[in-house]
Length: 164
Image (cartoon, rainbow, N blue to C red; front, side, top):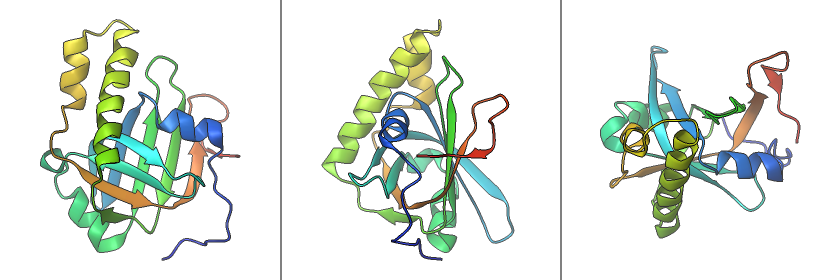
């Protein structure tokens, strides 16, 4: 299923800045038997028009996720800030594995530094934070158009569509 190019992005500038910060990134897909595969992401970048999101993962930690994305284009990504529990979920139906760029490597390096600072701000050792996220020496990039977006911060608004 292709994304509707005339549909406005569900991401506003604040959402885009949030998901590109030092948040936890969890990427999921599923196979033809509806068995899920989940991996911790290594950062993301949002296109200038906020219509496309590229998430970065380590293939060595991804299990069959990359195969699943290539087979069906389905992806769900959760972005959550540990210190506040602010959480956004994006879903896409047109996900594809794309060529990694030098900018993606810079995104992964910035994300690691911000992730370590985020977790250390709430009392975790920097070494633990780095080990949890991984150094991401080998990366794969998954690009998709968000077809659905949800506010998932715990509380009464959880599950509500994200409004730009």
